Length: 112
Length: 113
Image (cartoon, rainbow over all chains, first blue to last red; front, side, top):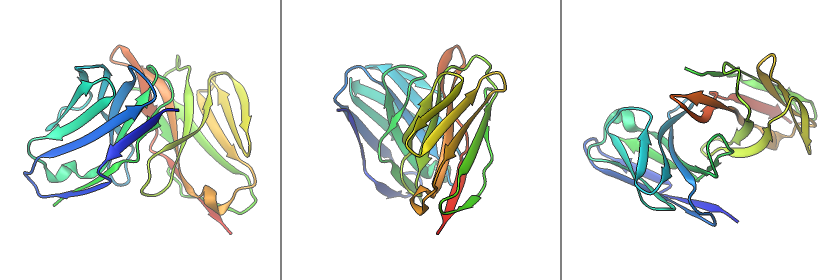
């Protein structure tokens, strides 16, 4: 069966510090991978998606970036965090476009 | 911009009642529809998917789809306090030349013992 791992679960970072969140998927090959952010009281915002190694598409211009160094590994990064980067970050995977998404357990990021 | 609209709630029902959650969408050609449940502080969990007009039942959950009216609903029968959560509607929509899931902001459901 397929599983998705995301870490860390919680993170408190000062403004201006770097960020690296990692996500891995097991039990499937060549999945579509996604990074979402959910701010308090708001909906899910798609940040990045990837259909293959090295292929990254950005949905929202911002100071975040994503990379996919391996087929089942997806990384979200920032060089300098802003207060507005606080939120609940979710990694997800799907077999293909417009199919059901399966989410990781999420990372609660607080930028202070 | 394709949109998915849900009443934010909160929707409050007594234990044992039927909870009815509604969702409307703007993309007329959408073909895939999903309901997710999200407990506070947790990630969304897929509970139902529906692709054809009509009803689809899974245990206490029934998803209803009406593509002509562009709405999808979720009924929860015999509601339990453990059903208290935010329910997210997701619709496959075409944006920027590619198809992706668009999420509503969710309806918060509270089931009172």
